[in-house]
Length: 231
Image 1 (cartoon, helix red, strand yellow):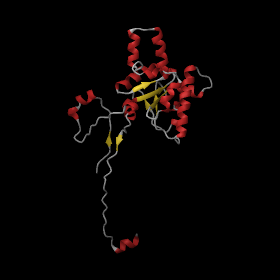
Image 2 (image 1 turned 30 degrees about the vertical axis):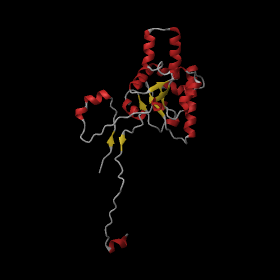
Image 3 (image 1 turned 180 degrees about the vertical axis):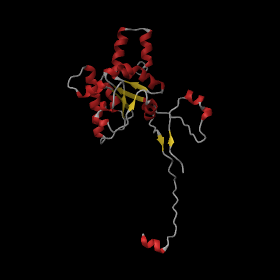
């Protein structure tokens, strides 16, 4: 009987280094996501902004195309007032210039919310909870609340099933900061659960069940008359 297998992520350089240390029954396969499945929309609040450069850089190195409204607005201002190599270098690191859609306004960001092939990462932080629940929020918080409302509506229309919203804890956030409608989904913490998060973005399960045989064999054994009466 075949047992369950554990799945892990490995980039090409790591694969070359560990080619000699493979398990005799280990199976390796390349994952080639379609271009449209590489888009990732990130919604976050102001207190997690300092984490976004490293986070989006991590995603881009794994072949994804992360986009966010707030980064596009910030860098639009940066390009307008500071045209230096340093500014352009920062922009290239987080994937704004090579993705013109990031310069669209808030309404055009709806394309990511309405595109079922785009996964949405929700950066959970103390401020995120405040932005979606408090009656007084700043302009940044209003956009965060707008995206949250749109996601919650989709969740309800899908029969309270979550297919593409991925909550990730940043800073000192806890499960208490996760919106109630996302409490029953898998929650990740950055950067400690980065490998599990990558598997989710790749649409892969951490544990692969053994394959079900195409044909099942039934065994019929004769039962003594006395035992059959007891049944």
